[in-house]
Image (cartoon, rainbow, N blue to C red; front, side, top):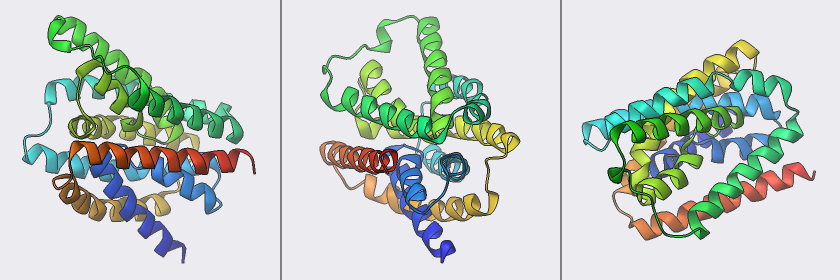
Length: 249
């Protein structure tokens, strides 16, 4: 029975990964918590799933020439650095602290992207060195918190890239998924060393997420940017609601 639910969870997390570039953790972690998994192990399964979904999605996006490799690699290097600390962070934080932190980051990202000023800083007005430094630092900071919370980075990168690059939510997806390739790999190694990776469950979710990615990319090509943003908002709200439920129960 667990296999069926994990496979179903992987399929829908793959769809969300391809559609929104959020790694799947925003969907996976609240559901795994409801299934009775402890927070650190839910994070571990989520991060392992991201390796499957992000690499497969990025391969498909690369074939379609949708990835800005220069920005993606700089972001990814920062993600590698930041995510390497995730195992130590999970070891020293309680489950309740992780729940609260997960909720706060989800809420702040949601508010920043949907309710902040529509003004954007455009990187083209900056020097290449300045752009690279900002991307590297952003990747590092997002990597530290994203892998520790099992959310890959897309959840935080979407409002960040929208604010600084002026990209809409559909345009940030390929770059966010490419970043997650780096952050999830580094995060998984760190979590494995800390003993928080349940390999069998993670592989089941990960393999079926690759099937979901195919469906997600087809859906992405059919919907408008406005519809995409509205659905993304619904996922944010559902994730925050489930996390609040776990905090107070």
